[in-house]
Length: 515
Image (cartoon, rainbow, N blue to C red; front, side, top):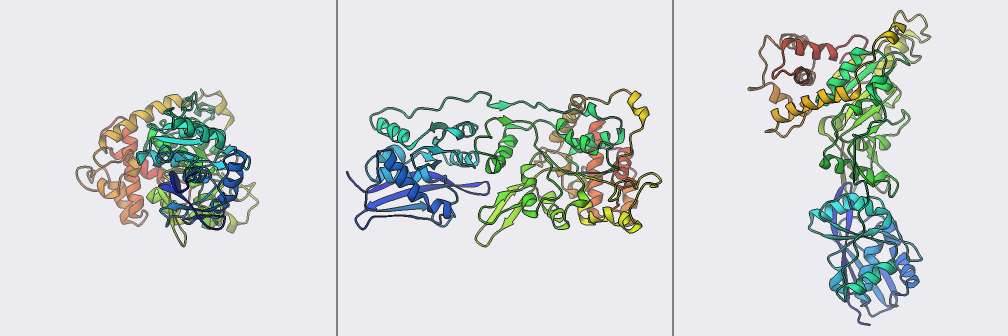
């Protein structure tokens, strides 16, 4: 048996950013030992024990010599047990068990059991995406991860169940037999199949119109009103009127999901935008992302390209709510650690819902409200001015009267979604030169300068509000964005004075705290 150097490949993830890793193994003379270098974490650093046991169980034992494994570039932290298969293949190539030329250009991902079985790992989709960007054409993954890896175009996926199977493949490859390709999984692209419909909501025409505007231009919404009037129903149905995700957007969404979902759950490319509704007791790390050893994406990133719904928003801790401010502006979350900075995408549509007071009965004449006057005044005050200044639409959702039962059912989601899709097409065409897809992403300075600056006669109401101090400059820009969305819904190429007035009214709706 000829000992020497073996090399193959793996992928290290920092957030969603992958780095192609050279797994180098050297077997030399000296006392038996097995070391792994290149900043492995605890799980990765325990790989030698798993690799030795798995190799022995598959009757290809690691030689009793000095085994040194380097994960290059060594300056990037390596986390998790997904390097096990790559380390085992590199060591066996160094031992002469496997052909060195056959394994060096293949990415290997997966955890080894002590009996040699391959176990699925998280993060396979972003890892394979990085491998594809770097020109890798072959990846070997556990059977549980095959469907996930096959979501990436241009990469040949080989699904293995054990280390023994991988060893057999490479021994046959040395004789000219190609590695077996995993069969394609059925249902590669999932359709947009909503389980709920806007027609389920009784009444509430103002709130329905606000949600349609929100979906059109990606505008954030705050709904206030007593319990049981349909705020949660409306929020849950917002995704049914949003356009389906493009393939690129769906890959971004599922790459985030791959890091937190159970192994094997990411199997089809769903086009429905995600809907995430964390409980009001959620922690800062759970909402924004974080963790002690591995920095995982939070709810704001899991809602990327979808809807983040905070029900009973004033019940969330202040620090949690304030963490929303930065991703609402930048569309990403930046989490700093002593040795790294992790970035996750967070371009979501925020929907806040709140009762008028802690007991929820301070509406109308408020005769049934049991709250102290100070509690009523301060309840919505928990939503800070800087946060509310980033919310475009503020809607009061009143109680539903019995007469609403006799009215015709509201429009179904399909009809509203068709109008939203038409309006989004107009926006994409208008802003294509700047690279913005929707009105809600257009910088304010673009809207305030030619050729998109509106005549003074059109913006008179919002100009007076700015001069009187009732609007911030950010609020001014957001009113203009909503006005453009209202015009797009109406089939107009330029907002009218009524469009601007509608946007301003929705921002300063009665019954909602003003920013």
